[in-house]
Length: 212
Image 1 (tube, helix red, strand yellow):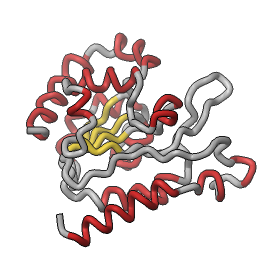
Image 2 (cartoon, rainbow, N blue to C red; image 1 turned 45 degrees about the vertical axis):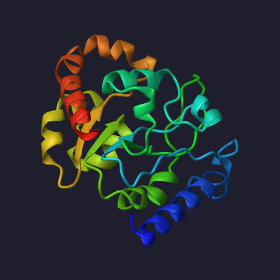
Image 3 (tube, rainbow, N blue to C red; image 1 turned 120 degrees about the vertical axis):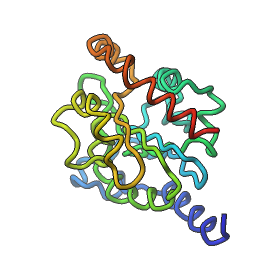
């Protein structure tokens, strides 16, 4: 890596780590500040060929600072057929969610959506810093909306079901839409057996080729 690229990447990582816009200048006004101290979590890599793009960290990830350090991560690693060591090797995987900080819970105890401030401020800069990415794993509707734009279907299920179209039609890195690996989606997986039968074999084949 050239010295300038290394310095630019270090500056970007430092700026993301120091970001407090969701607390200090929230998009929806002062009554919608992040109610806890922000802890941005992202792995921006100059070497990885695969980008994992989720929604936002959960509480456990917020506490540990390690992305997908929870049951969702265990399921995702199973989908990818990679070890924990491989998953956290920044030479193999970049992990850059749509929101870098844990957004908190809603009234029903579910994670809130990614903060509105994050993607407009940081997403394009993060992508520009990783021109070597060949495959984007867009997990959930927010990641799919950003990476697929108007090619996203009306529902997450239809977007994932149309994986063949998306995988081959992107002008930049290939995009493979995935459901969130949360335990809350266990029912979805049972209702949509085509995902494990059709999508996972392709996902695993692509991953195997790109991490060698």
